[in-house]
Image (cartoon, rainbow, N blue to C red; front, top):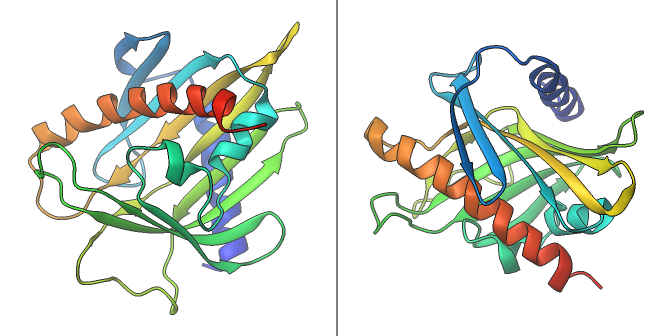
Length: 210
């Protein structure tokens, strides 16, 4: 699948997830964040849905999650060690390599992910990122990392009516971490990781963006 097509494919999946309220279960609430999940329809794992209100403008939140080499996300996201744009397809689409640290007392070793990422503004005024796994000849799997796979995932940055200084952040995550991890480790990792993502992003959008 060509990169632009893959990016649009991911975006279409996110739009369908956003519009479909059925099948979500296991709802968890923590620090004003709601997390739920359901079986994924694109891989053998779960699709996670998270949402919450961030006390920051949508444009500032977006700056913190932009797919950029050495971008702000390296500064605030505990689950990211390095970002590198492998190829810019156009002004809205790029191929991005992300590396992650070991977590859960080294039970999950460092991972690398290679994704095509789309950033766009929607007709309803929301901003959107969408990503999915791809391959690229300039970024083969590296020996010191396990190659993980992201399936259609990303964020909707939705303006809060009457309060331009807040963002309704709706996110979807579905990741195959690779390796042979027990299901219990995976199920304990993702909700905790998503909660940390929201808290750190909320802080970064205020402290790191002028």
